[in-house]
Length: 239
Image (cartoon, rainbow, N blue to C red; front, top):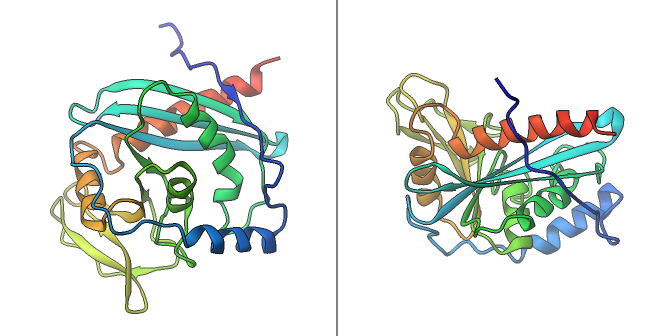
């Protein structure tokens, strides 16, 4: 069987004014947080395009690869794929992971010829200690509607939702709902959905269920994860 092809990666560059310290990054987060749009419902489920983004790292070689996979939102068939490769742009600091990933993710999105539509991130939006995770950060910088769908609840708590597919439970920080645990398959561990930018929480949950007809993880994330891992392997073996 021939190897699965991977789109040639575009180079990603780190902006000259990109934060280099935790204090600088926190200040940027606080500033960008004021630009969040939280009063739009977002695209209708099953309409237009929906794009999954994900990244893979090799910290020892200082390489990060991002993938963007555009799906037809109705059929969930692949419309277009793009990858980007760059250098890791920020040290590992919990709550500031967006600063490691966003330059390369944006490069992959900009390489697309198709309209990304709704962007689904493998991570958090408002479900973040400062209410500004990767999905929110990416949405503000690109202007695109975004949601976060994470595999674990980060530092937040929730009551176990019913075992039936589609069952939700509030993901809370104290008394504040910051997202929802959503059961995407009967009897399978939920995923954790949060608003990124220009999408309501109800719509984000409905989008997530639509994107996960067969597996726990949305098709957007499954495909982007597979592509970025293959692209990283190729990048590490390239001359």
